Length: 131
Image 1 (tube, rainbow, N blue to C red):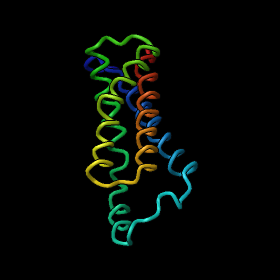
Image 2 (image 1 turned 180 degrees about the vertical axis):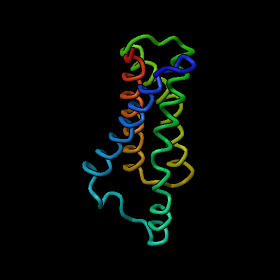
Image 3 (image 1 turned 120 degrees about the vertical axis):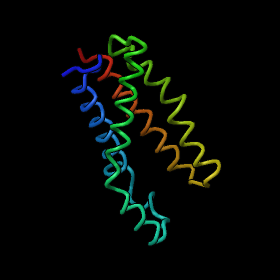
Image 4 (image 1 turned 45 degrees about the horizontal axis):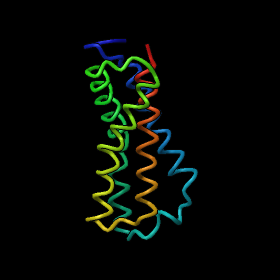
């Protein structure tokens, strides 16, 4: 299922992997108390935005696939290396903006950064290794 030099099935699987990693981290590993501290209004806003949850993993996988195509990433190890670079160059610094300027809690910011980095690594292995 290739189009434009991109394996779209790999993109879908990579997006699912990112989403599953987030589910495991936030739904199973992080205690609910760690994510408390929100007002009822903030919780309502967050719940109303849940339908957009799959959008970020899809965008991440699509644009990583484009970068991998341009960079001629040809195997899983190269995919992982590039994923770490992309994650540390873009995703993690973006999260840190919220910590610095938004006053987000340090522990949740570190969990968010780990989530993004692990998601990038999984997607990188899938996108780089899937032939």
